Amino acid sequence: MHKIHAAITAVHGYVPDYVLTNHELESLVDTNDEWITSRTGIKERRILKGEGLATSDLAVPAVNTLLQKRGIGAEEIDLIIFCTTTPDMPFPATANILADKIGAKNAWGYDLQAACSGFVFGLATGASFIESGRYKKVLVVGGDKMSSIIDYHDRATCIIFGDGCGAALLEPTAEEGYGIIDSVLKSDGSGREFLHMKAGGSLRPATHESVSAREHFAYQEGKTVFKFAVTNMADVAAEIMERNSLVADDIAWLVPHQANKRIIDATASRMGISDDKVVINIERYGNTTNGTIPLCLWEWESKFKKGDNIVLAAFGGGFTWGSMYIKWAY
Ligand code: UT7
Image (cartoon, rainbow, N blue to C red; front, side, top):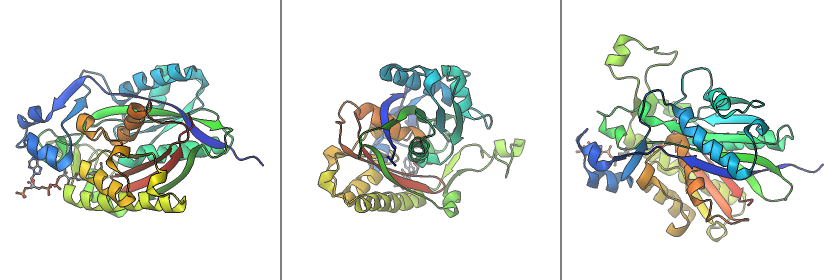
């Protein structure tokens, strides 16, 4: 029987207008532009300001423009997978809220929580729904309003994260060898204590004490996470190359999660990929968690050519990590 392949057929992104610079952070915590730039590669990040605005509001403009570009209506979407660590509310799913806001009346959806690896996990899951023959248009959204869970008194985290969102449409392709070719996905829950939110879940529901102890913010032991990220992101990227008999020259673009420029450089170096093939926008947006990879795809879309071999690689809280091999289909 003819195998159905899933391909990305459109991408788009959105970042809010407000620019939080390293210099502004210097007025909030004991840090400086030189330290942030040299240790992370980040110069500025975007923040969603305004009452009543949530992660779904970052997704609406990204998805609406994506649909316009593809020339389809929201009612044609079958499934929405919303990859986020900052859902609008614990329930219902942000995918449902987004469906309502954009008029995706015929879609069902759910949220996917895999921290910074979420978008890669979401693409892999969405591709399976296409490959099964069950659905024809799956929207995978990756976005976070990280500013809603960042403690702007904590210099270990507030310098890194920002807000942003991107989306990709998956559709079946008749062309053999194009689209999502392979993925390697991993998780290890024993790493959960190094990057997590201490309270607000069923383990420690919100109390006056948990709020006073500032436990509703992202907590990270940066050095430990860094160590695991450098090793695992590079390992998984190397694994996907080996599995698919790819050498560095075969790869047109590496699209890595944007957590720290030093982690990106280590991954590229392990793969033998030169700087000009590495997609990097961390200096402008920081770490938008689920948003980093789709924002990169959006900003580099015009440079991608049909047939380009693209490798995605991510590492995040959980721990979770993964890589994906895509042959760009348009
Ligand atoms: O996206 C999900 C996965 N997340 C990641 O991949 C993030 C991984 N971790 C990192 O990117 C890095 O660990 C950080 C950027 C978070 C921190 O960089 P680091 O090089 O690991 O710094 P460190 O925590 O080892 O701190 C080095 C020094 C310390 O001072 P002493 O003890 O050497 O005197 C810190 O107190 O830098 C100090 N420091 C700062 N100084 C200025 C820590 N944060 C800051 C800061 N500004 N914001």
